[in-house]
Amino acid sequence: MSTSEDAVHGLVVAITGASSGIGEATARLLAARGARLVVAARRVDRLEVLADALRNDGAAAVAVTADVSRREDVQRMVDTALAEFGRLDVLVSNAGISAIGPLGDGDVAGWQAMIDVNLSGVLYGIASATPVFRRQGRGHFVTTVSTAGLKIVPDMGVYAATKNAVRTVMEALRQESTDGVIRTTSISPGFVNTELDGSITDPVLREQIRSSMDSFGLAPDAVARAIAFVIEQPHDVEIGDLTIRPTVQN
Image 1 (tube, helix red, strand yellow):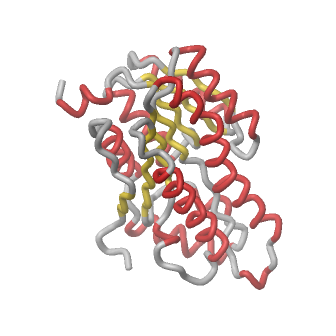
Image 2 (cartoon, rainbow, N blue to C red):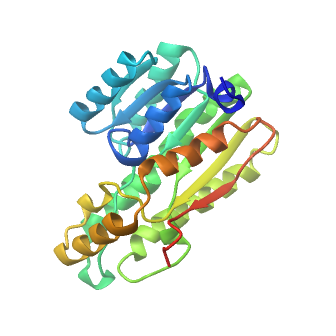
Image 3 (tube, rainbow, N blue to C red):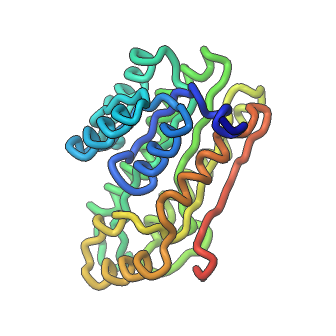
């Protein structure tokens, strides 16, 4: 077993948005390195398939149906980690939606959905896991943000705003946690070949994003490796921000 696998082996990791894309790839990679997993998502059928596959490969894994926009669902995920494994070491807040479009369209419902999932879902995770991390004396928040918040472009204003809000929250949490108990990491992926375009209602925009994903998007496993890298660092090492994008992305 390599040094990196040793660092991950036995950790209890909860992952939201785990039924596909980056979340699923992260679950599979960490399970292969010996982590014990709580995988959470809304799509229970795909989630159970993933959990069964992980267990069949010898991993300790439990599935929790969770909509991160619901405070009680996120709390249940954390409570499940404690009930099944007695602790929680890492919370990977990965669930996200991208209801992008021009601000002039006035898609208030889409804006609210992104706020509820992309921002509130992360805040609920912090509220639920921080007391656990404090009792244990250590814990790690790893949150999927986006390069959309680093380079502002048309049609992604509210999506980028939710991601930048999360980036601000994570930096504030880092500054509030310099006693060495809690680590925070923001992972900012560029184009990744996932199903994120499924929440885009505008067919032209959806096709544009899908085309970019298909032509040069990273495989989700690339981001999973980045997440594993920040987790496997010694607890006195905090990687606060990590950006990962295709080399050909503008």
